[in-house]
View (cartoon, protein in one colour):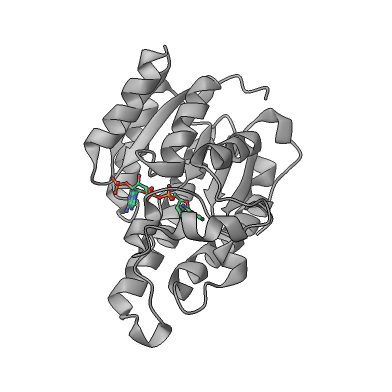
Length: 251
Ligand code: NDP
């Protein structure tokens, strides 16, 4: 990995895949904005682990659904460390398993607002800051999609799958729109990864139960997703844009 540093925002950086991405990005020389929504202690713990190893990081509270909060957290990151060069749109939610007739629209809106509108808002803010068209340095965006975008999650999370399908479309469209402005846009599609998201999805044992049925024989780890994200951010993927990369053990 020929990462030479830069300034990165990781949304939902306080836990799971986001936290693993923050740690690996710091190791690759990035100054890291560790965004969180509610749990400041988890975000502060990630920052402490980074600074204890001599890295640079700042915890940034902000709800990705709220335009003003998004603007403020990017502004604070840039004031602390300089021009933005990377964004990982990782913040996402999964609600309890349900069939479509049982899903109330408040829930569906919550999922869409966080996973899609949140990613859109952060991408828009990052592009305004990174685009060479607006005097930025250029950069790279990685959106965290899901294998669910392709598999559809029937009978349990079709709202979530739908939101991740939109992330894939956003990735492909933005990649073409900003390619000439020095910005690459890609996505990773994780399979079943061991994080706390499954508890919020009402199925805390999901990763251990479904892991053995994955072709590679196990659930993935947050670090394995972070590795793929860091590759897509790095110069070693310099000719890759608009890609939705499955990191799913063959699932
Ligand atoms: P976790 O539940 O472990 O972490 C979610 C993170 O998102 C937390 O840091 C949380 O912060 C943050 N977050 C949630 N809502 C908001 C919001 N409105 N604004 C800002 N931050 C927010 O999830 P994972 O690490 O498992 O998931 C990360 C991404 O990976 C998600 O997009 C998910 O859909 C995707 N994914 C995960 C898979 C898996 O099997 N784990 C599989 C496929 C995709 P706080 O705690 O402060 O609320």
